[in-house]
Image 1 (cartoon, rainbow, N blue to C red):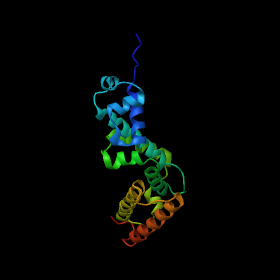
Image 2: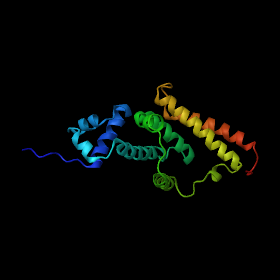
Image 3: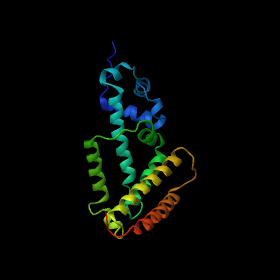
Image 4: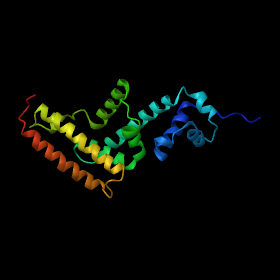
Length: 196
């Protein structure tokens, strides 16, 4: 009698991650995971408590992929690199981007947030701070720049991931981010120096 194939949780998560990456969240099921593993669905159900368990593990892994994009050194400005990485992630990993921010948005646990923050700090360098890059801006101004920049960056990423904007290469992305960021900085400087 042929021996039953054994699958670990990691193998199942790897297969599920591949399904989402290639086909998108709506395609994920025990059946598509089993198909990726060339198996029946029985080992999937016997190895995991629920599909929620898979989803949480995939979410953590997807944030790791996003962090890899955000910490690539494209320019000398680490904050600009974060935004570029976010947008390029949305362009190149469309299904993962949609999974994280549209189809299954869910906050990370405190431990997951701290782990990712530590990895980001290590990748960006210890001396990176908003104050260093926005010396002439108030605390309120820095918070405003951060919020507006994220809104613009997320909007651009959404437009690219859904094909609303096409033929936008990395040089164009950098230009758009720099021009918009400069406008936000100029506005924030008008608020006044380092007042809350």
